[in-house]
Image (tube, helix red, strand yellow):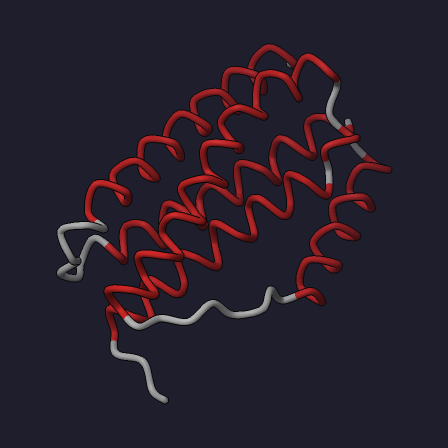
Length: 146
């Protein structure tokens, strides 16, 4: 089955949400406890929104969930760990988390260019605000570490 542009945009958004959550979970132990406590509620909120969005996308857009790209996740984790050997591990990780947020913001912007069912629109706005909050927090943390 071929997807229309709106379904492709939503699928890309769901993938970006899942990737950001996976990356955070995979690197949780690399964060100092105080950073973990600061970021975890934002990622928990994202996780809940993603699951809700998956259900709404299935119902309103007839979009079925896909499996994660495990090889890409493994590559991203390995690349981040290698960069940590030559730089500050926390700074590398924060930079990688910010990159995840940039990808997510692009996916959100693309979804905003398509007409969405009324049930999905408020959730997309919630995801946008969550992403902005995470970006602000990550930049604040990054600034403190310099």
